[in-house]
Image (cartoon, rainbow, N blue to C red):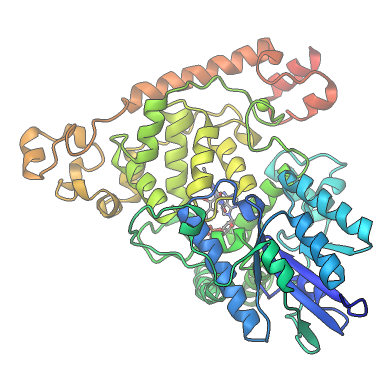
Length: 535
Ligand code: FAD
Ligand code: MG
């Protein structure tokens, strides 16, 4: 034990990068220094509680990338398995730990873990430094600026965020001068599982869903390469005046340029992305990008969902979640299983679900289509089922953003509450987005020979056409699970009924029992709010 050495740990959870990493700068501040960058597999951190093969691979590759970068400056990333508080306590005992630094996770689900670590540090006089850079602003500052409550709509959020001023610019890159990397003492290597090599998803009992056409690679190095390409695309959009090209002209088959998984794990700093975009816009148009009409607005949606979850530990569920309406969804395990397997008989929905399982990423427009289909659009199944499946399978699967989007799409919260007017038709929507059926054929090879006019509604193909295409509906590809017109009009009717009963008897569904709770429902239709307040 060396009591003289200033010893610090950077505990990576999210923020898997070296650029714009304020916690890293804190950890290597003030040499002489013994520095341990660590990642702990505790079965929970970095969203490893519910994780499938593809996201785990992305995470492990991101850790591998960090390790390579740290080795190039004389260190390494220590990968351990165990309980974070116990590991930090043992580091304190064995290497005289003086400082623990980490990126603060804003989600309330990590509160117990971090409270335990803070307590361990406090008892031993170890400084615990928490930094915020996973979001543009500190979500708690947004809450404070909004009078201590979450801003319940995106508009309210934008308004409140504007009062905080511009988000901070990224911090400097690390200067490794004088930083000495520590080596874990052998006793700790015996006590805890320490990975010599970066593990594989299989080491965590996960098996590959099979070969996918698109292969996402995790890590900061790749994310920064991608960023350059992405910025060029966005610059072109700024110059040509195209609003949100990614949404308005979605390219379902193009090369993957999404940064969502890199942002989710913090391989790319959101502040770096935001300010790069901001500066490019300024160079092109001399001004700030107008909020909401370009990609910076998408980053603000991310921010909104994070901010909404900070004080709501039940944000990821329906019943106990005060901002989520309790909708009486049906339980239909057979339909749910068909949706998950991509066997609903609606090719556009099925293509997206197969892409999700195989590759771990699906374009936003297709996420919307399958989420609407599962919930208010067709199957009337609880969004929690879909959210759980997404969380497991998406490489960008993120507790807060995923739940926020599912509540949005299923009309369970936010401005969308009980809005069933804009149901996506899985036939017409697919035809509009994928007019030549290339996306469908890529993920549903059994439909490859079906003429394009039947590709979105294969049940309409005459038997001889099915025979010619070697695809008999009901045998090689399933019959449609529902009649969309019937299902969606039934669901609109349900929504209308809920809306009416909520107005008559608000407590039956969302049970705000006092004015404070009622304020949480401010985005209900005006007549509803006044009714709720009256009763
Ligand atoms: P761009 O349009 O390039 O946007 C840039 C970044 O902004 C994205 O990378 C993402 O970080 C953020 N962003 C964009 N749209 C949204 C949005 N609607 N909500 C929050 N942030 C957004 N995104 C996740 O990162 N993790 C999830 O678990 C997730 N689950 C979703 C579930 C459903 C049902 C739906 C409809 C959407 C979900 N999204 C999720 C949001 C969105 O689909 C993805 O962020 C987007 O597809 C990423 O593509 P992109 O990077 O090309 O987006
Ligand atoms: Mg609820």
